[in-house]
Image (cartoon, rainbow over all chains, first blue to last red; front, side, top):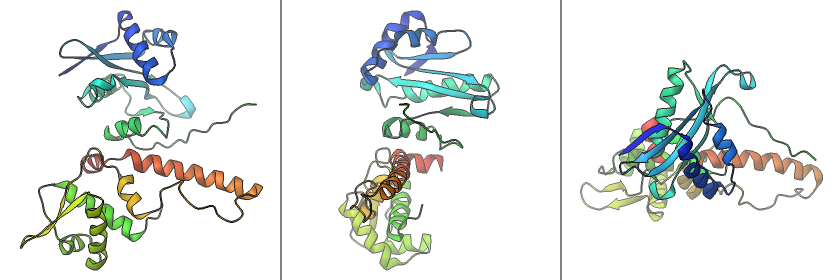
Length: 139
Length: 130
C-alpha cells in the first residue's frame, strides 16, 4: 500500500539524496525551489511510512507555443521499492492535480536511452508527442 | 517504418498468444486470425519458440502457448529476432566520406529513436493501452 502526499521541507534531504544516488548529480537548491506555491511536488510513502520516491511537475502555458499542459519534470522511485505501484500512484496523483487545474494533457521529456523511464511513461499510456526536442552543443 | 513480414507475423503471434497465456493456438489458428500464410507463420513460431517466448504443446489440442513475461518483454525483443539490431550493422561504402558521415549521423538518429520506441513498449503496455 502506497500513500501519496505533498512534499514538505523535511522531505528535502531524502529527495535530494535519492536523486543524487540515481542521477549522480546533487542539486538540493533545485528541489527546494520545487516547494514554491503553484508547483506540484509529491512524495510516496510505503505503508510503514518509509520514503519511497517523489514526483515534480507544474502546469505551464504556451511553452513552445503549446496551450496549457501539465509537465512532469522529475520522478524517482527508490530502486528497492520499485514495482510496488509507487510510481503509478505518484503519476496518477499528479495527473489528478493537473486535471483540477483544468488541463487535459500531460507532457514530459525523457532521455531516449533511458528505456526504464520510457517504459514507465508508456505504461501510463503516454505516447510520442507532437514536438521533437532539438539540441546543439555551443562552442 | 517498414517491418519485414516475418517481424510483423512474430509481433502478431506473440501479442495474440500473450493476450491470454493460458490459451494454446496452432499456427493455422493464428494464420486464420490475421489472414496470413500458415507456412510462413509456422517458421516464425519456431523462431519465437527457440527464443523462449512461446512453447510448442503436443497432442490433439497442440499448438503454441505464450511463456514469456508480458511486463518484461518489449516489442524490441521480438523485432530483434527477425531484423538487424539498430546500430549493429556493417559499414556501408562511402560512409567514410564527409557526405557519407553526415548522412550516417541522420540515419543513426532515426535508428536511435526507433529503438527507444520499440524498447519502451512492453507487451503488457500494448495489450492494456492498445
